[in-house]
Amino acid sequence: MRSMNMGFLVSHGGSNMQAVVDACKQGTLNASPRVVISNNSGSMALQRARREGIPGYHLSAARFPDPVLLDEQIYSTLRRHDVDLVLLAGYMKRLGEQTMSGYEGSIMNIHPSLLPKFGGAGMYGGKVHEAVVAAGETVTGVTIHRVSGEYDTGEILAQCEVPVYPGDTADALGERVLKREHEFLVETLIAISEGRMG
Ligand code: GRF
Image 1 (cartoon, rainbow, N blue to C red):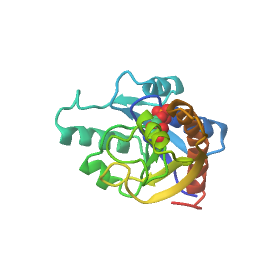
Image 2: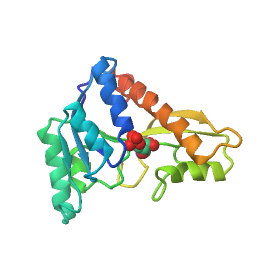
Image 3: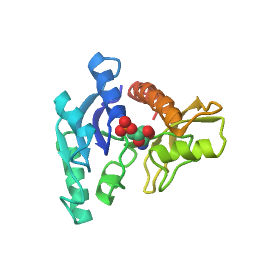
Image 4: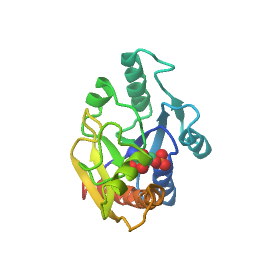
């Protein structure tokens, strides 16, 4: 059984983070949410952290214009809270050298498509689902992968499919995918914690 002290990096809603926190509280996932870091001071994700009593930090380029210093802050905050698994759950920024190397192999990202399709710079939020609908795909999905230096790259740990229905709007599809993300993220983290994956 792997120790899972989790640190979350989030930019907006934080609904995936919430799904993981709920699973920890219910005891379905044997992990401990230690800290939430957001580049966005007004994010719903930080509000959720506050509500859950999880230490939350606003660490951004606005507060630390020097990227090296910002990276150092992020890394030291994760370490200070004994984090051993970092989850990027809707985090819109790239991580710096120190965090990437200090947590090599232990940083994961969730992406709302079947990577490598519909990933990379500029493919975030509703844009992913708009592109999937525009391309006429009949299936999309969710990818959980280890993070490497580039956006949406790194070893794929798990993927699941979500159907695209005829006449789907990007919004309708996005809602369906997000719902599946919540379940699939928890399922995948359970598998990792039990040593069946990762
Ligand atoms: C999710 O679709 C996730 O896959 C992507 O950003 C979105 C975050 O949603 N990386 P939320 O903040 O967890 O609600």
